[in-house]
Amino acid sequence: MTHSPASSLTPASSTPDARLALLSAWLQTHADRYGLDVATLKPASADASFRRYFRLAGSGAELAAAGATVIAVDAPPPEKCREFVQVADLLADAGVHVPRVLEVDLDAGLMLVTDLGTQSYLATLKESSPADARKLMRDALDALIRWQLASREDVLPAFDEAFLRREMELMPEWFIGRHLGREVDEKTRGVLDRTFALLVASARAQPQVFMLRDFMPRNLMIASPNPGVLDFQDAVYGPITYDVASLLRDAFIGWDEEFEIDCFVYYWEQAKKAGLPVDADFGEFYRQIEWMGLQRHIKVLGLFCRINYRDSKPHYMADLPRFIGYARKVSERYRPLAPFAKLLDELEGRAVDVGYTF
Image (cartoon, rainbow, N blue to C red; front, side, top):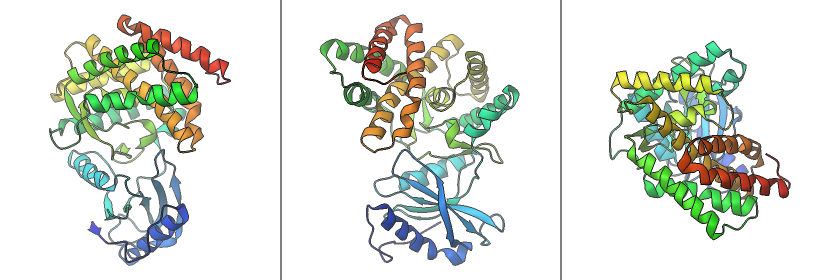
């Protein structure tokens, strides 16, 4: 991996065409080393952030095979190139399959990384039999355990109380206020504050480990070894149940409770065998997962609305009903969360009134 200055190529700009020109010129400086055919550059995937990914042909000796493809990443500052490189090294050292960073310009926000292919977990799971889905999810959970076993304090940012609350505050601002057009009155604020306090206390009481934050099927690839893991630059040090919850309770695919519990039990048993500090009582461990998942769902209700209204990316809005369903199911199951369940009922009625049907 080498660092090369992009400033000598062309001035950076916030406009997509100028960024693409910058990326293409930068790739050309590495074309000989990796056998890059910059003319084959084409979009590889979309992202909720301002990062963009492109695939292009490469055939250099440093790539695994002739006729290979590589991924070029346009991550305009302040997107997290530096963090991507750091966490990629941590994951690889832990025995998790991630893209190898070939070249990076941290200041310009440009990267060239190896390609993990085009077969995503998400697409594959939607077509898989229960037995095949179970095998894929167990592969993912095994990789997660390897990552968590590598945990050390003071390496990644702490997913602390301020972080947790900041995420959940997206819901009243963007979902309730902006999307539903409803004032967050004193009664609503009280329910939110009490619910947030319960969820923060639960998260902070758990053992803290390396945490990917976006460990979910759309960020996992069918690969050898399996799975390949993407989108890890936001990794932090936080609650041990977070990534398990995000894997099984995802925006883009749902499971019946029997399959979920089978996966949770598998992780719990394997984590205990590996020496991870999961709760000795499975009932309490499951409660921790549910409350951790609720914290994530509350965040995402606001996040998807912010992406829609602020960033003009509406396609995530179709997944709001799944998150409402997750949040209601969990909050109805636990007495301390019952007031939040009632609030969700009121908000759902408001959503219908303004023409948005869950």
